[in-house]
Image (tube, rainbow, N blue to C red; front, side, top):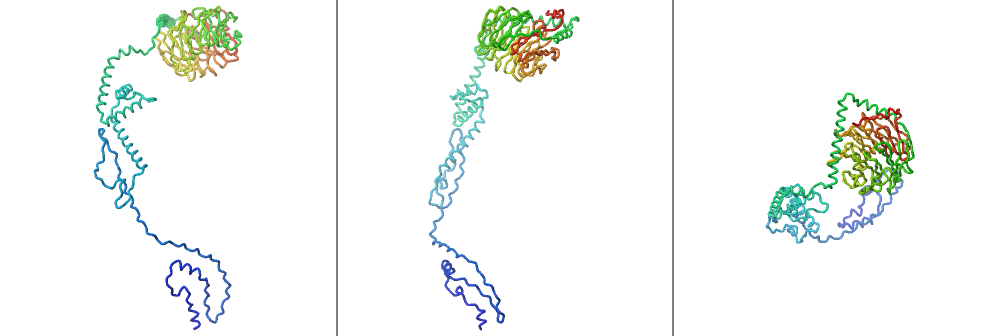
Length: 587
């Protein structure tokens, strides 16, 4: 019985019948009952095992569960608002405003209350603005579609005329041709949408009438508004005189070339070889200090007995040849001199200066005339072969032609986008060539005033030009260190000579037949090139600074160079006196 009692455990307080308690009571009861370990059951007759004492971990007390308040009466959830229907923008027809097709006054709109609800929902300001922007974008799209179907003139003059007839400004500030045409298209589409087709048709009829009237008055308008600048009577007389002079010279040149080709006694190659051999024997003959400042230009007189030089000091000097003794000093300019040249017919010379003027001098140092008119400093100066006209170039982007006898400006010629630097006349007197800092050389017909050739090829400013005596070769040199030979018959560059290691300041053909070419450079040298194949013949080395200019005497036996080292150097052939007396035929 005792064993049965031991096997039957006593009822615990949790097993006792008790009424069902709530959650709070259960939690409090659990916290008050102490924790008792359960002892193992040991059968009789077996000694109990020695059980080490069990150390139980400390269990922290459970936190009380917060009480849940009694549920209150829940409000019914408001129903979701009905989604507003998508409103398509109305398509206007001929200016009419199309309203909605639905006439029903139902409650499903966004500003109405949903069925079964007592609350009203209004459209927010942001939603309303989005809807307005959408409608406006759709209207603009439809307007553009309508405008794309309209016929709009493509000529800018017609576009302006139609805008004027529609009462709109013909142009806006900064508006270009295509923008103006798009504006007219939108105006026409707007008028079409507003139903003002009559106004459009009336403007179209007026435009057609004006176009028909314009065709009748075309000839009168061309007479009233000429596209050219009318020249003076003196320029017309000068053009006629130049034409008469050049025709005679060109006929003589062609006749001489024809005779030399047909005459068996004429050996052009042998003559050229003789001249080139003379050029190979050129050597430094004389060196003289020319001025206290660097020299900028030099020129031989027509007979070769005088040499003129100019310097940055603003003074020009005349030297006797071949002893190079100073004869006269020309003072009158207020700024540095840029160039000097002798007349091909008379013993007079002209100087160009940075004071924007050119002056004409006598060989005894007397000032004859002053040519004023340029707006910037002058660069180069050159006489026409007839000796009656003088050409000047300037940094005001123009070159001008002056009458030597009267001092009147005959021609102001534009055509270069930057400063004009070099100027040359061909031996016939009919053509002039100009070059400038725009890397371009232009050939002008002095008889008509037209630009007949634009020679493009240099990649840097072109500084020097020279016509050959054969009538169709033109040499140009520039800052790209190259000298180009242009064939006027083929209208293209024939040779490109990598002549120097620095910019080319001056180029000159041998004056009679153009058998050789001389170039001067800032690399302190001058070089002679054969006109047959433009191969180097001779290098003239002797200057210690930049060579700024050179000139070749009339017989081709002497070359003068001037430099920033302030010296004048004469290079003469070392042949016998009998050989030097040989001259090439002119006739």
